[in-house]
Amino acid sequence: LILAFLGGTGPEGTGLATRLAMAGHEIAIGSRSAERADEAAAAVREASGSAGVRGYVNEEAASAADIVINTVPHTAQPDLLPGLASAIGSKILISTVVPMLFEKGVGASAVRVPEGSAAEQAQSLLPEARVVGAFQNLSASNLGDTSHQMDADVLVTGDDAEAKAEVSQLVEQINGLRAIDAGRLANTQYVEHITVLCVAINRRYKVHSEIKIAGLDGLHA
Ligand SMILES: NC(=O)c1ccc[n+]([C@@H]2O[C@H](COP(=O)([O-])OP(=O)(O)OC[C@H]3O[C@@H](n4cnc5c(N)ncnc54)[C@H](OP(=O)(O)O)[C@@H]3O)[C@@H](O)[C@H]2O)c1
Image 1 (cartoon, rainbow, N blue to C red):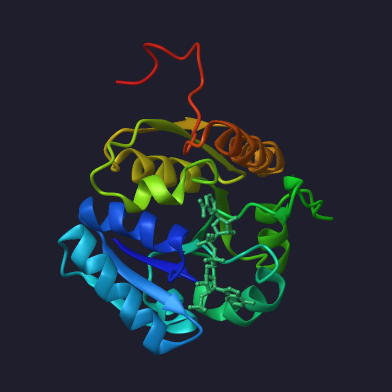
Image 2: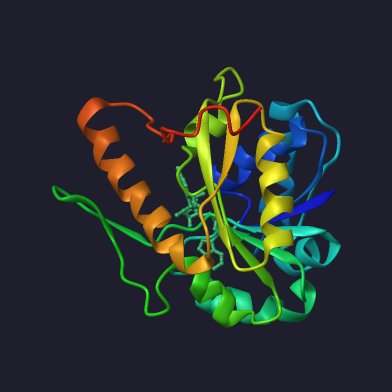
């Protein structure tokens, strides 16, 4: 598959792109700047050992892709996504976005999104797209460190069962990750909020925490 990352030049985009390139996918790193995209693509080629990683501006990346992965900050998506409607069409759009605010001395807190979650906001901005929430609870730092063995669950939410199954397959192509169907897209707010807790735990224990759901033993190979 060709996977495009909107704002793929940040730690989340490059980290996830590295793991998915290692799983054998072609990667289109998107950016507002072709130059920054090329630089990030070179870094992902180097980290993943895969030659199939190229940089593009966001719209070209989205047009070239089979699946689009949104890795821009939540504040960026209301301006960015509507202009990509024809490039994205009815493709799967994976939302990794966490609406979160950092305040010095206070830490992280969730930002309320009128639509419920960043993923639902993306769906309302792109009504044709098949939006699926995934990857929000993984640490970009762990993803980008190829010497780190991933060992976490990924909660997958969405209203299109086929799209959710396709994204779950993608998740499990990354060594050490298990996909869990976490229900409809409206559940994404709970998933996004878990990341706020992970950030609080990270500050307290100086770690890169992620999550695993208990009680599912035997349901997955
Ligand atoms: N970092 C993590 O550990 C982590 C974990 C889970 C989920 N996430 C989610 O993943 C997303 C990306 O996180 P990140 O840490 O990689 O973020 P980031 O570095 O702040 O931003 C990623 C990229 O988004 C683009 N961007 C920034 N502002 C923009 C704007 N106004 N319009 C269009 N594009 C803009 C930039 O790319 P260009 O300048 O190249 O266009 C930037 O490199 C966030 O929504 C975050 O909540 C992050």
